[in-house]
Length: 241
Image 1 (tube, one colour):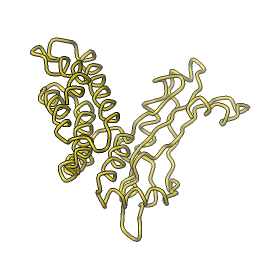
Image 2 (cartoon, helix red, strand yellow):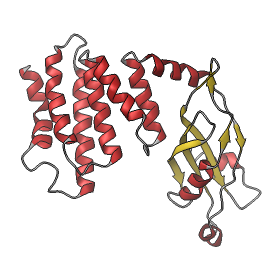
Image 3 (tube, one colour):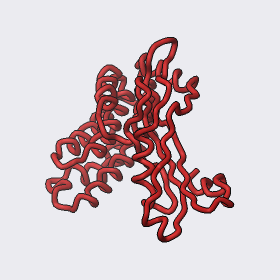
């Protein structure tokens, strides 16, 4: 236990100090949240599988201290909540962990990649529905029923800029896309918004697993933007893969 306290001392001081994160700008606070969460997660990963669950209470105390802040954005809160659920799972409190993961999966506006990671973590603590959805995603090989070509930004046309955008999204049980997120783009930010807009209008055959509708998380799609016909799209897309 003493060793655990020593390992977590920097985290405790940073997250639980009287000043907290309120006295710094939001960007600095965000970095502090992620850094503290990462240190805590690394500490948990280093613990042996038979560690006393009481030791996780130290982690949970500081995680709750961060969550008590009223100025965390949705994604920041979700990141810390996922850490909290993982700690509960490691402590053998699977039902509590599953409740948090279920809440995270219902949270709107998070990047699609977050949902897929949360789904994997949810399955790891014994959630049968999450395990079923993961099995479904392994078998699904959906291709768009309706493809929407992105608009080429006029500013990029005027300057002769070409590039690509890799997006990631969730395919809902209806076949619609949601939670579109840019994974990477080249050049950065030039084509992002047009790629997001096009991805939001793509439609898929509704995903099913054993006859039941399911969501597909973390579906990747690549858009390329080129003006010259003699350029190989594959050569261009390598910048975003």
